[in-house]
Image 1: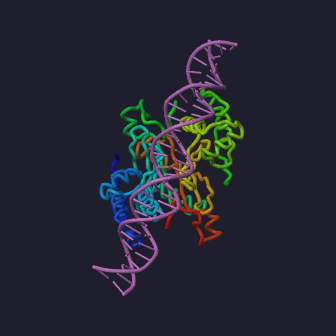
Image 2: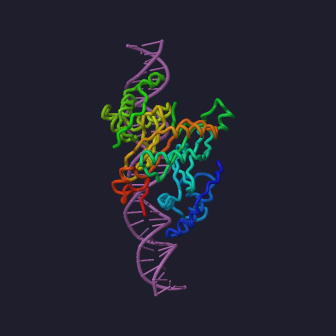
Image 3: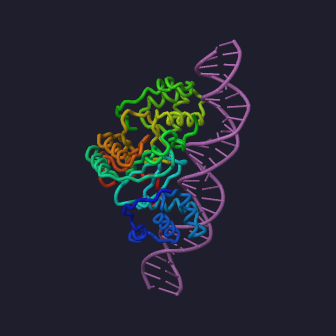
Length: 165
Length: 165
DNA sequence: TTCTTATTGCAACTCAGTCGCAAATGTCAC
DNA sequence: GTGACATTTGCGACTGAGTTGCAATAAGAA
């Protein structure tokens, strides 16, 4: 779907080895898949793509690697407003926090960053004394394209995982 | 756990009937439970509390009611950084968006609001043309109390759902 | 009270994610 | 290169949140 804008992303493999993490073929494959992804990938897609490189990779390995990378803060986990189901999505962590806008109408994900966001983070810490380690800002709604192209039929896609009238 | 600060919250029952939603005993019970909650409740707790009022309530009804209220924008769904498991938490929607700070150390949830947050929302819409319908800002880290009381042993609670070294 | 339609409870299901364990493999010292 | 050993993998069985179709029930309007 939406191509990713270019924030700086870490060279995950380098980070791993420099931190003394054992580099298995599976991890290498997974990390490469994440790094080269043009969209946000969920665990299932990650598995599928990793299997194109190493056919036997197991689901459990994918989840364990995700946990590892999350713990090392090399990837970020996203919900993307649960646009489809309860799964999580992943992206290589960036030098600058950014937020995600999920369009309920077309399903596209937009990324957005702003000094105001940084300002808000600073204010949180200053006022509440809370030390932020991970932050996640997501919004759901209707993107510009959908608003202008079909001003009436805005919400074809169902709300964040909702079914009835 | 953490008592909730007083943002204005809607009178959910009034909203429901004024919108012509059929008021069943189950919905009434669930709505009251949500409204009177002192913490953020997940579906299982919601079920348990509703059963104290109406013994036979079913899980499915809870989920269907949650969907309904979400769709009507009367409640907000939170992940609370997946502090424990993948479940979701709910709160009656407030007049003003606020963010949630989840302490990995003690598990407490802090709520926070700021004009800067409003400013950020305005900027998002102005710059990207995205019409925000739901917004969710959550952060995980270490709260002031945990930072000052035990500056070394900060992260007793595991990271957002992570298991191994 | 009756009628119609929405809602409920039930039970079976889906699907993401987890876990224990034996076999395989990366890394380091030699 | 070779061997030793801790770590990681694949497997399979499991958990737990959330969903769905359907017959029985109850709300609300007439």
